Image 1 (cartoon, rainbow, N blue to C red):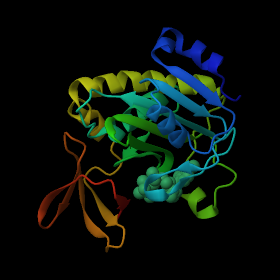
Image 2: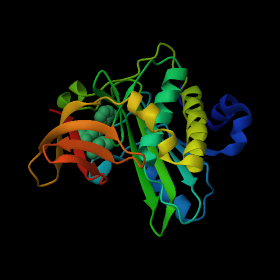
Image 3: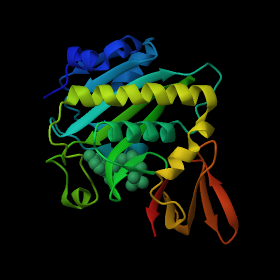
Length: 256
Ligand code: ATP
């Protein structure tokens, strides 16, 4: 059943007052739309759900594929204290999603640095954090999760993707469960930083101590061992030269 504002509010219960939820029948990109609303002064906790997202964005101009009834697609605006830079935010969000999926009975998921949710090594969900230009303490957190594999997905991507395939899926309940865990996790993150969440993140890390390839655009991939993440969310990448801290999100990680 497609999500509605009333059903999400009812599933959120008393927490509904912490959010300002809007549901659109269709939207090009919930992140793009929420960035515009944030720029116009939208409050922290503003949420935009799209029952159909036609031009979902990934990192570096990539696209996120979704189709109505097959996908959860939403964005949440979170304003941190001015002057703070939310280091490790996309990792904290991944942990919140994993916590929520477990609570709704979707089982355990694994996390891949910096922004993917995996099941059986296949991508189940993606996260795109975008900071508001000129106000880097205001973050638009976009999340896409596959309920079923979208029909429009090309075969090679289909083979690398996973879906929740929950027996009975009420989308509003799922959105409320995700928002509930996001609220708890973001409050933890705002109070104590990613450091407070790191051990739990590492416990769910898909490639802990595993050989990986790290590739940046226009560069030869480098092989190393993934040693987890630092307290600020930096990837710890070990090569013969030692352990390197990778902060830039402009790289992709693959099992070697
Ligand atoms: P990678 O995960 O390959 O390192 P990335 O983290 O940069 O890349 P994102 O920007 O998070 O990727 O997501 C976009 C990519 O996710 C697309 O290029 C495509 O490969 C994949 N993708 C797009 N839609 C879906 C979907 N519904 N389910 C799973 N994967 C998807």
